[in-house]
Image (cartoon, rainbow, N blue to C red; front, side):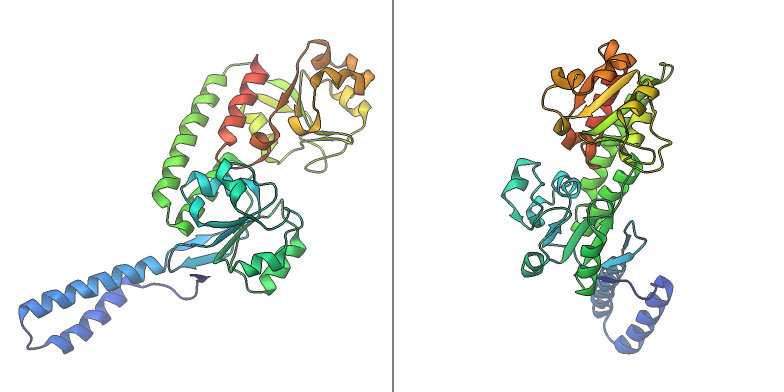
Length: 319
């Protein structure tokens, strides 16, 4: 069960009052009775303290768990990947149509899309935890589920440390704290190694295209912007007024990127890239053959595979 936290644990007061009660109850009893009841008291106290463990989501809402969630609905692919990565896959009972990794996630019951989940289907599953994204899911759906008093937990990681937090939070909520800590430790080691490798290398101007028709790029403050920076690139669209701005053909030319990266789901074959927008032949990246494709699933999902995206971006930028 997951409930809103109310009140505050005071360990000293709890022990003091409990033992005062025991003192009155066991006066005149044998020492063995005292020992047994003290052990019972200790177990009760440990259970009491565990029930007060808090998890704060990315809305700033504090949740308290009395036991790990066993019936989880994931409303975003990155969360689904996270749950499976920490060993909580068997506790997942519902996912979106786009949750395609790992392979076992495909067998889970579908509850609609990321932006249009089937709330009736979700309610019918009787979940004890629904995990959603503040960026991917629609606010109206969140409001509807909140009004139904469904157990919600929101994530919004835009950086690798943010992903680490989500992993650790979900580890607590699912009873897989140790596994989550292990995944985070592995990720941090890989991240630090990649960042250290890039120190002293020349930073290159990057444009990362998430769509070609229309032309949409990754702007500043996004997860992709964060990865580009860590990989040793400079996101030339970081000063755009929106997170994922739509740009003209001419704007791309004016940026003069040294490297252009296209999401794999935006183009089937890079050989057709130049013919789509002939004016881009004057862009340094096109002239020098520095146009690359990157796996959309890995690079756009702020989850445990983000370090793979970082490694791929590093390879692209510095080759």
